[in-house]
Image (cartoon, rainbow, N blue to C red):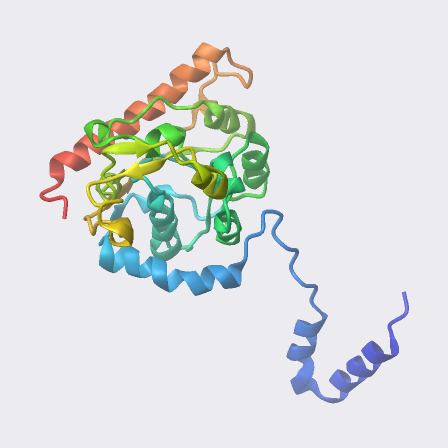
Length: 290
């Protein structure tokens, strides 16, 4: 393949001017391929100061167990879910982004109903998230990414205050992903998100709002909607995030890739119980909600 006249001219200039060689090499390097899910590093960088403020100043998040997250390669971060609005995903990702030695990107999967909401899915995608599906999770893991999942689904984020820190039954897709691709499961427990929007009820008669927002309900809290927009401000609770030791079910010789449904459910329940036990331990240590 012959070089174009412009490229030959540029290379000749580099040969006569060695000091310009490095910029020339930069110019000749191919552009990185766009992320298949829409991740935008520049947008992420612009948003980082806001998330860092929430993480370090507003919710004063204490994080431990980051040594359990690998420096490279795929892994599944499995966490409890709460808070009415999923700030817990943001803070887990921010903890890994800011405090992990490799400052890794966490690719959370979000519920399908969010994909039809205005503006929100585009922002999520640009931050590195993707619509929840087995296929999307598999592709991200095959890319060597950290993938975050809330196996409770909507049932977790919609819990009322009377169910605080009671982890709901897990969906089992993450078990099959781990066994199929041989990636570790890292359990994660979050304390503090439960109280930022204490849900006391659900407004389901949305009328035209249902078509506009495409949400199954609007959470009712002690402050919202009674205090209007001010009631949407999350409370400044004190958070604690703990990452547990990796779980590798695929290392057990008797486990096979194609397990019966009951066996998969039993493994998911073991992960759920470990996270529940960690939540109990963190709650026992907590001196104050704020």
